[in-house]
Amino acid sequence: MSTRKDRKKSAPMPASSAGLLRFFEDDNQGIKIRPQYVLALSAALAVISILMRVFPVI
Image (cartoon, rainbow, N blue to C red; front, side):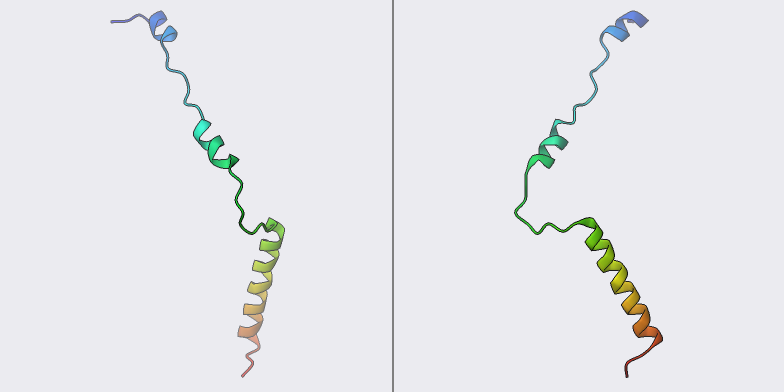
């Protein structure tokens, strides 16, 4: 069996995140919208939906 000192010397290196970094390096040509606009649009849609339920049009 290996001793405690041998285990420390041959410990595996931590996994690298090279794959993740490489994934985020690519720049898409898609639509770019700020997160604040998405949140504001979602909140506005929710408010309109609630108002339409409280005050039916027909």
